[in-house]
Image (cartoon, rainbow, N blue to C red):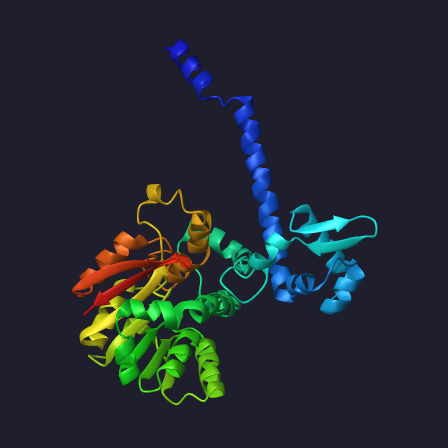
Length: 362
């Protein structure tokens, strides 16, 4: 018996090479997560855009062109050089952004991943509260993420500016009806950019945006006013308590359902708000409900992390179910059917692999 125990210990002891590989993996994570913070700063300060516009230049010239402090810029450039995003020539001491990184760290399009990396710093701000929640349960509030709406709005705007009118809305089969004039609502509209795009493109239709963030509603209304839109309005509303019956022909929700406190109730309210034959377009995370099927997703680690630090946490913080970011296509489809939708289709877009597009009919 004792011999068996010793053999089991020897078998379970990892080989030194495996330990070294594990340590190397941890160091890689340490380096990459650190550089993620610097990339977020580079996006916020416009440093990447400055580098894109400049030939090989000194840190002083780059700082002057950016209107930033040279010492901070020089240290940031050291990080970008060590990460391989920037090439450095010691003599004459110049830096240049490597051309293959230009599309993925600059511009307003969907290719700019520097914008997405801002979430890393945002999650770090709430890390102590999340760690405490592991002991006490509960979660966070939206007030714990003062920059979340701004980051989320810029992320979704990139997708919607590129694809909403020409690619996404045609999935619903409602484009001709929108031209003729129908009633549309957006659930969890945030800063309202998607709804304003639709309102501007389809002046014969009327549009209503619902969100429970006063800050987001104010920003949405301001954009609508700046565009001179008279066919859109925004309401401060917790959609869990939405009491609208057969008022809309089309309802949309862009990455808004999975972090609701009570998503089943919200989906039921949406179904009730649609007129007979109405359409619900739900854009949400393109992942499986089964963990074992998500290993191949390039961004799986990010999804589970942002769920822990935001989407699941804010739901639990409101006394909700904590559905989480990675609820997945299968569970989402089941919940739509349980909410009373007669048919549910799931579609994907090549230009937006991050999301799945659910078309549900009332």
